[in-house]
Length: 345
Image 1 (tube, rainbow, N blue to C red):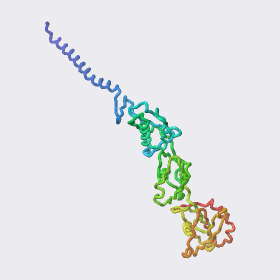
Image 2 (image 1 turned 45 degrees about the horizontal axis):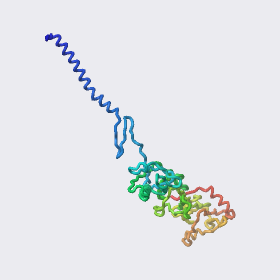
Image 3 (image 1 turned 180 degrees about the vertical axis):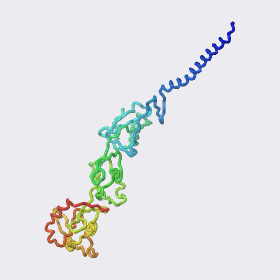
Image 4 (image 1 turned 30 degrees about the vertical axis):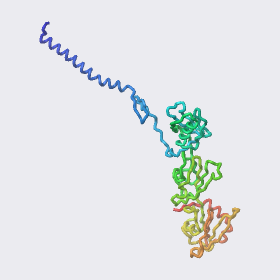
């Protein structure tokens, strides 16, 4: 073997050094390349008991579906799409829609009527049917709602936002009024509910609800999907003539108003009022005006009980210089259409 000169040995060292450096560089890059290769492969993730396969840039998850607040008391109706799953029995599992008669069809079973049932009741009914027919002795069934049938209730009258509201399940009347933003200042004390089921003789009911009360009278009154709720307007009493603020006044709170209260709401009599000629104009059975004299002095002295008023009555205080004003009672009735309506605060 020939010995290398010093010069040759230096060249060999340089070559070996360069080779080692290249090898180190290659080795240092291999884990990164391996990691990149792994990242390009699909990964598996679990959500609860279900597993979803995901790749970079995709979530692989189903969109979140908001469960309605009233889902627990939700009752099925025609149009609902249900996902019925029978454990370990794929032939009996699948999507079924509640038909126009409220039934669903499952293989080997007669049509099952589910309209009006809750989810839990529908599940129990399917399980019991499998057992009673002998097809499956211990069927384990789950029922989920895939699509809801749009069900609304209609709220009309003196509410802030009249119209239709989505109502999947029964709600209390107080809740329904709250969904519309509450009553207007002109809301009266009578609430009418027209139920969707017109086959009953009691399909329309009227409830008395004093605006200033805590709602106990209607706390347990339920509104069903498809019902129509009408918040009626308060009765209006008109105070015209020689008063400081003539106009119409809503009969709110308990829905009652007498002559003294009506004059008080009109901020009292004017200086030129002819107290002795105060009259109340009412509508007779045939619609004709009826004049009822009222003694303001005896009423203020406590010798006469103030007359109670009905919706549409007119309290008229004539001016002292005017004579025979009530020969034109019909013209006073016409003035009510242009009267400013005031509410009690």
